[in-house]
Image (cartoon, rainbow, N blue to C red; front, side):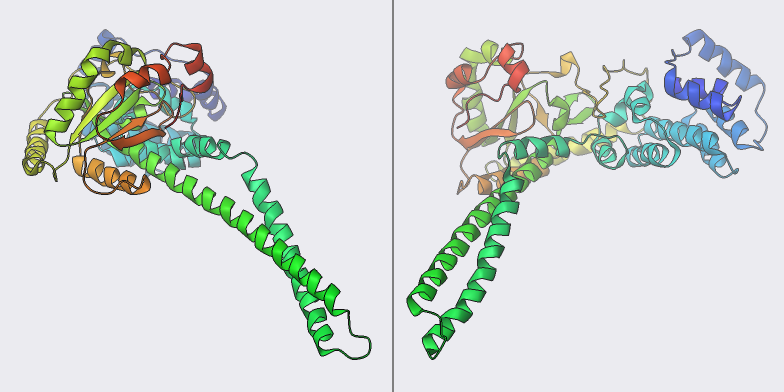
Length: 435
């Protein structure tokens, strides 16, 4: 909010000045003393009803500074109804997003950011760096917003590019095989007519042997090019489904604090999680087997996500529901408190929101029904039948390196997966040996 605050205070001198300061000048937050002074002034002198969009935005900012987010939101909405110009609408929308975020109205906040970017020229980088939107950037709604906002780089696009890189020139091959197959089909139609004429015989009829040979060659060419085209097309579809599953995996939630849940995609580039899905006994055995290698595994960025499947432990579903009810009840009447420090910003649109203390050995999954649905889809994709205990190792880029049954081969992974700070990881994302 600090960035937007400065644009409001100094940006209404003129449209040109607003744009210059809004885009180019980094601004520090107001000090606590300044905020207290502003709050005291506002309580002793109530603001008059705003008559212009500018007045509404400025009064909204004053309400925001004294943490009256509901009133700030009302004023920012009023500003949008007072015929604002482009600069005023941009400021009102963006500050409205910040107010929505403080009120934990995540979807409304994300929608306001997208509209401010797409319709009023707000630079996405502003929202990526603003500490008032930090909580929003930890939500799945932010991932959706990046898909819609101009200049956003979605994780889907990044993983899609990696999937395409696994099959270089596939698009070119599809074009070539498709063209050659179409040419062979056209030639086959022409030669079929000549073959029919040769079979009828008569004066001037084509030679039967030559026509039959040409027909056979074109039929074989058509079959070969069709097979090559179908193989690449099916491979592309398989990769697309894989990317969809990995994108769905990135949207699943893990708990990293008492009241913080973040999508697994937030750990991309920072951790290589291992999902352990099965009975509570299986998870205990898998964790026990990892104890000997835990220090080395942590150097490789490996964390574990223990997921007790309800089919393996019927009481787990009830315990999960009770935990959700406790969490919802605990949030009611809870104050916002002091804002947490902002995480380092990224200029790619997707901010790395995980902090050092978030990179724990165990990450607790939430919304476990969504995790179980993903596990079932991954089982089917890997042709794993039954309901046996299951693991999946996830790479830095969010792709699934390997999934299988039983206890993960922790000791083998020490040889296959490089450490996070190694040159191999920096150059190749540390994909390691597949299989």
